[in-house]
Length: 416
Ligand code: ADP
Image 1: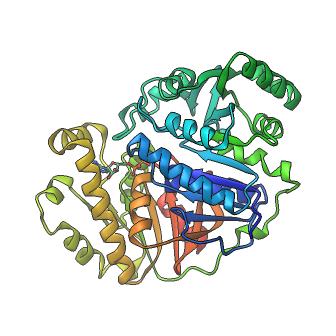
Image 2: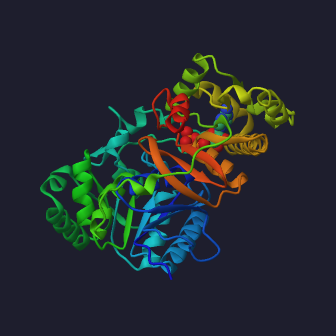
Image 3: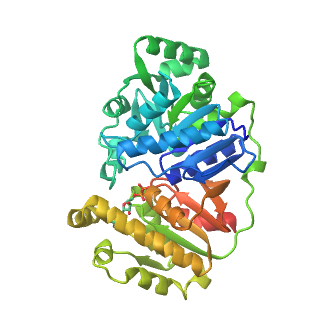
C-alpha cells in the first residue's frame, strides 16, 4: 500500500492544479488525479490532489463525491486531509464550501477545522475575517459579477455561517502574529466555545508558515491553496527542485478561454492586441444549433503552424448578463463548456500539444473531454498556475482571476 502524507480534495480542476503547484513548491512530490481513481495509486508521491468538479453542483452531490474522495485517500494512507476551494471563496448560500466541510468533518469524526482562502502570493489576504483580492474587498473585485458564484459579501464568517451546520469563529491577525503556540491556544478556546470552523486571517507567507505549524495533526484542513505552503514542514519536507521537471513540450499551441473573470477579459484583450489570431464563440449561436464548433476548428486548422491562437467565449459583465438572461445561467454555461471541450478534442486531433485553458469550470470540462486522468505538475508560470503534463499533452489550467495580463503569450515562452 502507498503511504501518502497529505490527501487533498479540490472542488475544481484549476484549483487542484493551483494546490498541487504550491505543494510542489514546498518540496512535496505530487500527483493530481482527475476524479476519484478506480484503483490504488500507481506513483511514489508525498501528496495526491483529487480534482472534483463539485463547486457548483448540488450540495448533497458535492458532499458525497468529496466523501468518496476522502475514503480513497484514506485507503492510500493519507495522514491529513485538505479540502481545497477557490481563493475567492467561490460559493453560494447553498454551498458548496459549508456542506462539503460538514460532510468531511462527519466522515473524519472531527469537531474542528479551519477555513481560509488566504494566498498572499496571488493577492488574496484575509484580515479580520474580510477577504481582499489585491487592494479591494472581495465584492468589489469583479467577483460580484461571477456567472455562477457571485460573491457580494467579503465577510467570510458571515458567508460560511450561511452554509455550515457548525458554529463559525475567527482566528484573527493578532493571534496569528504571535505564532503557532498562540494559534493552538486560540483553537482550544474556540473549541470550548463550540466553534466548529474557524476562519483564519493571513496577510503574508510568514502567517501561513506559522499557521501550517499550528495545523500539525489536524485531521481536516479547509483552505484555498495558500495554506499548503506551510504544511510540508510538518512532514519534515523542505523545498527542492526535482519535483517540477516535465518532459519536453511538443505540438501546436492554442488557448481556449471560457472564463469571464476580469483578469481573463484583460488577458484576452492583450492577446488580441498582439495581432495573433482569435475566434469568438457566441453562446447564442451555439444555442441555435449552428455549426460554430466546426467553424472554429476549420478556422484554426491552417493557422496552427504559425503559432498560438485563441478561441474564446470570454465576455464583459454586461454582455454576459444579456446572454444569461436569454439562455439561463446554467444552460449558457453548459453550452459554452461543451463547445470548448469539443473544440479541445478537435485541436488535439489536429496536433495541438500545448494548451492554455482559462476558467475553472471550463478547464474541468476540457480535461474530462481529453480523458486526462492524472497530471504531473511542473513549474509555475504565475502564482497558482503551473504547466502540467498528461496523455502526451502539456496543459495549463488557469483559474479566472489568475495570471498577469500577458499570461497567454507568457505561458508559451515559459516552456519554449
Ligand atoms: P472562472 O475561472 O473565471 O470562474 P469558469 O470557467 O469557472 O471561469 O466559469 C465561467 C462560466 O461561464 C462557465 O460555465 C462558462 O461556460 C460560462 N461562460 C463563458 N462564456 C460565457 C458567455 N459568453 N455567456 C455565458 N456564459 C459563459
